[in-house]
Length: 140
Image (tube, rainbow, N blue to C red; front, side, top):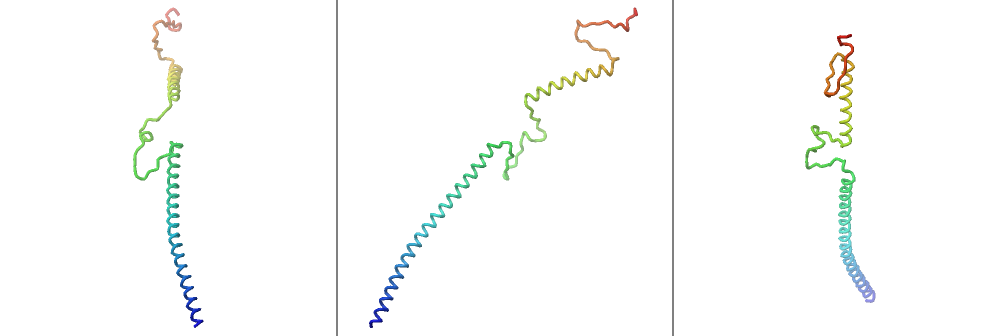
């Protein structure tokens, strides 16, 4: 009977221990479920922050490099300024310099014509300009 009492008491202690362990595991499981949910929320928050930082980096690149072409798979548009028929964009100083070069070219062309065709008469637009031709005069 003494052995039986030891067995029942040991069974009771094992049962008590197992019920205590099962309660601890349940509490731990609840805690682990809560901690897993918290970890999941933290990871989701980290992913949202990383996505926001990626978007901010893209916007910063747009402002820092406006010359870069826009990458878009959704819209297809034409750039008014880059199309082949668009007039070439020229700075004001370049336009002034180009006008001066064109005037110089006109003068060079006129002087070249004078040099290569001396037989042509010179058209005088100034009424006060006059000259004598010593080679064609009759007194000779």
